[in-house]
Every structure is written in structure tokens, then in C-alpha cells.
Image (cartoon, rainbow, N blue to C red; front, side, top):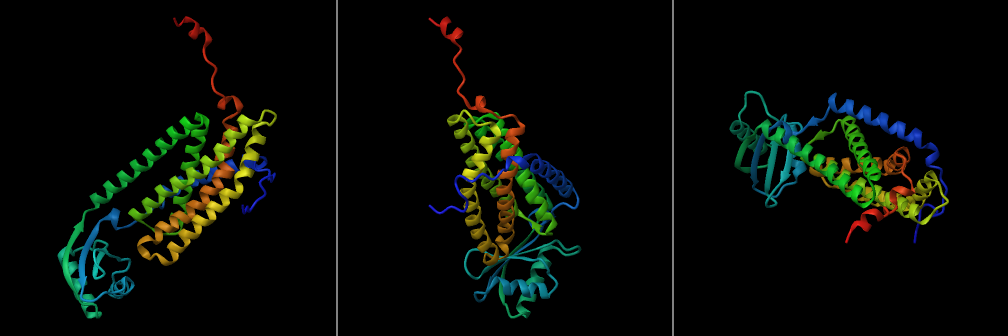
Length: 312
């Protein structure tokens, strides 16, 4: 089996654990600040705007429609296909003094003048209230995911493992969000899906490392907790990096060739893969030592003999 790193490598990750944990905590605090200021640049899914449905006379490239709209002052218009190859959905930011019907007719005429004749099938205005509901539902979804992870890890391993996993997940989502904000990208519903996917990907890495730590604690008696964590990270390092590389390559292809509708989703995943991989090695596993994990935490509890004697 191909391995990037020797299975018996002895890279001293724990030696730098306190430093990497401190850096990670600082990054989390900075990320929280960035979430409030400047915050996300919200897309039409959250700010509201006009939705215009068009049926083109001929199949057309979405990029061509997007360029024609930009040339007429509709920068940032979101153009998607739906239904058949000639059905196009255009979403525009709200414009002061223009209602949805007027804007739809304007876009229809502008595309016709650009050599892209079409039939106006419908138009509507999406209220910002819908965006608020999406934001609330997305927040609830992330909280539910984190609670589910805590319960799962706590039941499968032990509470200290669950706590380390949750803090690691919060770190990954926050830092990924901060980098996304700094890049100035628009936050829409596909980006929200990307953050949920980052949480799912990240916990997979942590479970692999935690599972090896649990196995090594149970099978060895002479190693200290620090040595157990170090060896566990080293033995899973090749698998962790290979998983990250293959997933990142898939997301890179989606980012480069998937088009604008999935570009931000792929970008969030690329950032999350890097952040999640590093945090599994440098943060979450190191947190276990700070929480005082040891062999006794993973040993089955002895039966209460006194209680057993009382039974008939």
C-alpha cells in the first residue's frame, strides 16, 4: 500500500502542542471578530431581489447571458439553468424605485438587443424576510450538527473526546468562515451547504485519529498519554494527508470547471479541507492531553459488586 509517510514515523507533534493550541485559539477569536465586522457579504438568497424566468429561443451558454447582463449594468447577476437547456433563471439584487415586473421586462429587452431573444415566463421579488429565515434555519442546522457530533463521539469514545471534537469543529467552521470573508466572496445558500459539508468532512478526520488513540490506549500499558497521542497521529498521518489531497483535487476541479453556481461551494470545501486536516493533527488531538485523557477513561467500568450482592 502506498504511503506518503512511514507508518513508524516519530514526528514530535505533541512537543509543539501547547503552541499550536494557543495559535488555534487566537485564530478562533480573530474569526469571531471578523464574523461581526466586516461579516459576510450576503447574496440574493439572504438579501432578497428579483427572480426572472426566461425561455431562450435557442440554447445558450450561461456565461454569454451573464456577460450581456453585466454590459447593461447588472453586475453580479446570478444566472442559472433550470428545466431544459433553454430555460434560464436570472436573479438580480434589489434596485431602488424598480419593481419586479419592470425589471423583468428591462432584462428581457436588454437580452434581445444583445442578440439573445427569449420569452419572459415570469418574474417575482424575493423578500429579505426569506433570507432571514434561511439564515436562522442554517444556524439551527449547524447547531444541530454540532450537538449530534457531541452525542455520537461521547457515546462511541468518551466525553473528553466529544468535547475535543466539538471545539475542533467550531474552530474549523470559524476559521474557514474568516478566510472566506477575507476573500470577499458572496455568501449564499450553496456556501451554507459548504460549511455543513466542512463540518462533516472535518469530523471524519478526527474520528480516525481518535479511534487510533483509543486503540493504542487499550493495547499498550507502558506509554504515556503524550506518547500515545504522538504515535496515533503518526500512524494515521499518511491516510489523513492522502484523504485530504484526493478530496481537495475533486473540489479543485469543481472550483475551476464547475461554473459560478458551485464555485463558492468548492472554495469553502477547499479551505475547510486544509483547515480541518491541520486541526485534526495540531489542535483537536492536542486538546485531549489538555483535557487530561488517559487509559482509565477508556477502560470498561467495573461492576458494582455490592449492588450485585443485593440482588436476589
